[in-house]
Image 1: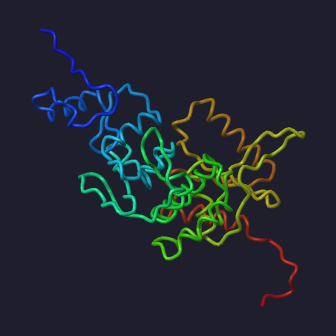
Image 2 (image 1 turned 60 degrees about the vertical axis):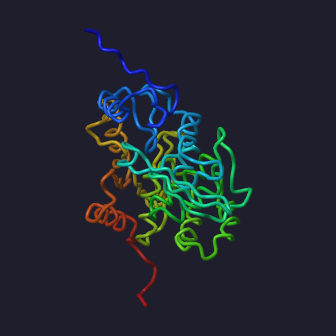
Image 3 (image 1 turned 180 degrees about the vertical axis):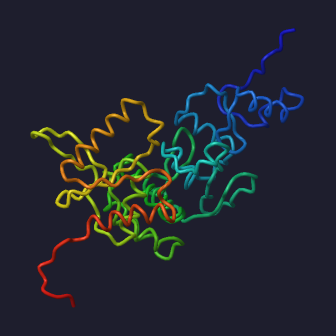
Length: 310
């Protein structure tokens, strides 16, 4: 006997949209288990083959927000094409974070994180019919409400993707006086550097800064015979020291990539460079202290022209 396949709605949908089903909860469980649908946000689903576009994301958000609500914080970043959710949320159902316009009450809908906020007209824009905080406002809000390294990464990614500058951030900072998290934001804004190409590169640079070490040059090119050949994530050119972030484990690379990595680092070391490699798990406790200790030793001056210390 042929089993009829469940016909899911076009575009994002919620349980309430499945009015033609006798038991929508059971149907959703079967669909998720069988892989025919996937969660987009908490309580919102799409067909498994649906493209992850800005329009689809906006339609998903519109399913669970009200006209007087403004999408904010991590959900706003998601609508702007910047994903700052943690892996556990990304693999499941990220929450919807919103704020109410002045004079309106936050929502009480389950699964939505809501608050009130001092938004002005120039803090809000429309993305496919959904009110959302602007890239500048979103970046600064995340700089306050995320944990330190994730906040710094978000500020850098928005600088890259939206063309924001340190000057843009500093001008807007004047409104954040006494705002919760503003001390962290003020510390991070001067460190923003759009040359950083990934969130984890931001983590590396912030760890170096927080350790009290001199800051390296991001994205430094090494020329061989006047030809730019090797680009280093972080470099101290005069000291011939570099720090490289490996986002993919060595065994996960292709054989061709592994050979290229070996040849590259072999050339660097043979030509007097100290190469310090930071991997995905190297941001906690002993692993963090290990590579920071290596860097501290590498950049420590071997000679001083002072006759004595104070």
